[in-house]
Amino acid sequence: MFERIGEHVYIKAPEGYSDRPTIGYIKGDAFSLLFEAGASEHHVQDIKRDLEEMNLPLPSLVAVSHWHWDHSFGLKEWKVPTIAGKETNKVLKRLSSYKWDEDSIKERIQKKEEIIFCHEMMKREYGDTNSIKVVPASIEFQKELKIDLGGITVTLLHISGPHSRDSIVLYVPSEKVLFLG
Image (cartoon, rainbow, N blue to C red):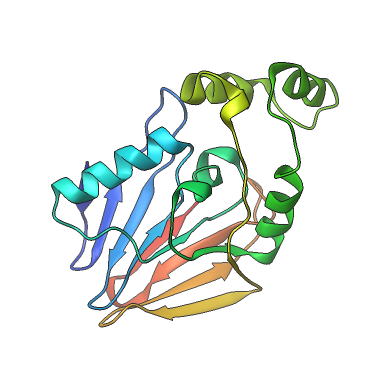
């Protein structure tokens, strides 16, 4: 379930079983934005159900903080414009050509292109990793993007960082809230 942490800002806590990240939601007067696309179709269904139960509109826009699977593999489930930093989208475009069967993933693990932890978490989240389909975001930006949601403005800002060089943050200045991926 989402927790309200400001006048316009909500968060959904991370879920450790399959490494689902914290999800941010900002409700403006005209539009709403979800920060993190979710890890899978099931994760997106859970997000949508929680928003509906709270009488919050489904997001008008979905943005991701970085390319890691648990933040971005749910992109294909959203039928709204999706947003990623240019570097994130570059990786997602590459990943969209990958095969996600066990042998292909194990081969990437041996080449150190994947890590065992993520593979194990993907199996927990998906069951059958063959169902994974990666898509890039429909909108990409470089450095900074400000979005007026109606009554509240958010800023997406590329910051890089040790977790993932393509990382962006979401800042909600009027509520002094910063979402880190």
